[in-house]
Image (cartoon, rainbow, N blue to C red; front, side):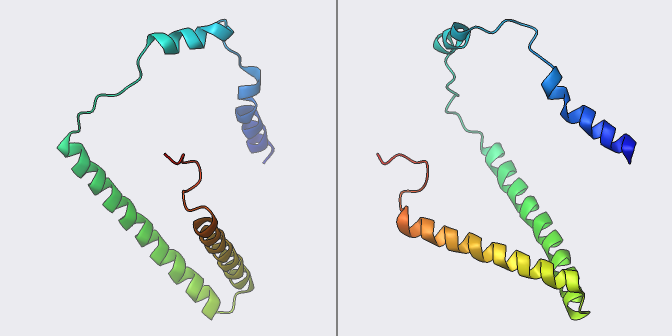
Amino acid sequence: MKKLLLLLLCLFSLNIITYASFPITENSSSDISNAISFQMAEEEDPDSETEETLNQIITVAILGFGAYFLIRALWRGWRDDIRWVKILTYILLAFASLLLLFSLVALIFLPEGIGFSGG
């Protein structure tokens, strides 16, 4: 256990002890962004659209498959009267209720959406 803790500590503290090996000045980023155009071409490949749709279908199928087994396990735990399953179920239902409540409040009071400019 101590070795695992030490390994995790070393991995997470790696960002703290590393540094950039090149000088960073205030004007260098603005000069580069003014010189280079970051706009992408407007061409769309029809094959990429079908691949994206297929990836979305596969993702939904995998998530649905996992949700089925998760719900089945929770139902069996609930039926067998396991205490931590009931507590977890109440916590999940409370979280889902709060999420639904905040979503409805956002839809009612923020019709434009958050982060979008009206224009």
